[in-house]
Image 1 (cartoon, rainbow, N blue to C red):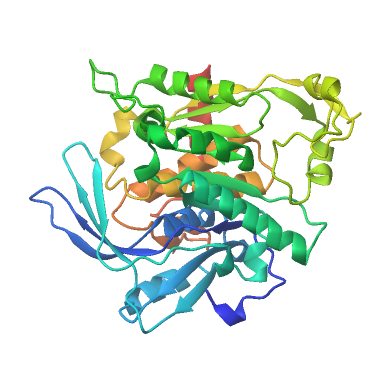
Image 2: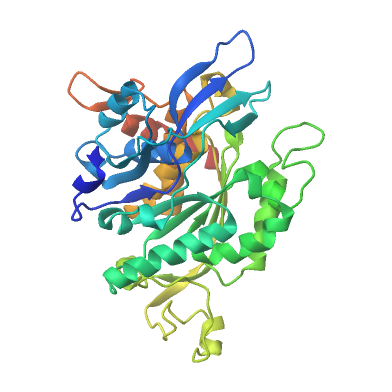
Length: 405
């Protein structure tokens, strides 16, 4: 872990989270006792999700920002240093570390409130190394998502006009997943590569009074999730973002519009530099556009291969409904999922495989209170909670293939 002025500008970064660091206290229903001084926050869990797939020294390609106040526990410093990530620490003894209170009811629904002032992150928190990350995790409102994406791209273009465009993985904040924010949500979608609310947040955007649950059984309604995704994708038919909906033990639903598809060898070479997708310009050939023949730079693309049919599919959770007892604390599962997914995409994995990484990352986040525990096996390989990440991923992929037939 590096202090701010020690992060090398030449360090290659695959993943950077702009989610916050929070020290949590977690309160459960009696007789389970509360726990205190737990590493939390969307940025921390997203970073650990990416870190799970990044054994040292690859761990240095995972970055996040930690604002350290005067009350910062030494035990947490030791814990974070053991991960060997490119964590950007900003110390300020004049303030308290951001802290939060978490309470769970009998349905594992979390209530949350800040107990000290929060310090929100923006593009100005990024040093040159972090600014040129291959992927970014954003946990924010729709309008702030647009602001962050455009600001990051603007700063990158100033410093390196020819740099490749990074991936943006957007996790909407629950409080602003409301029908009044739906228009802002659709405006934000063209700016990101993946939008990933959970089932209840997606339903809240769409004004579903049942919040994505079946009114008869009380379980997550897969039909409600599919219908909401279809409505969002239909509203933006020319866009290339993916919806990845996290549905707890039901698994994850992937939805993406079809369209033109490039040869794999051209994806990295031709990804546009620092340009938000989706805008029409007066000089575009509209007939070619609707035929799917224009590239992202507005020029006729002669390297198009057959049309991509799009994606509509469910992938199971690692801990499904039959393994519900394996879930000790769901805090951070969604954030960890997005860290695993983002770093997979940054390393060239297809969306389905990236979701598999995300599901495995989530499983490590939720099988204990707080962060998964890093260790070593008898031959020196990294373990988390006593398990090898690659073995759990292999087992999960087999399980998913069986479910998909």
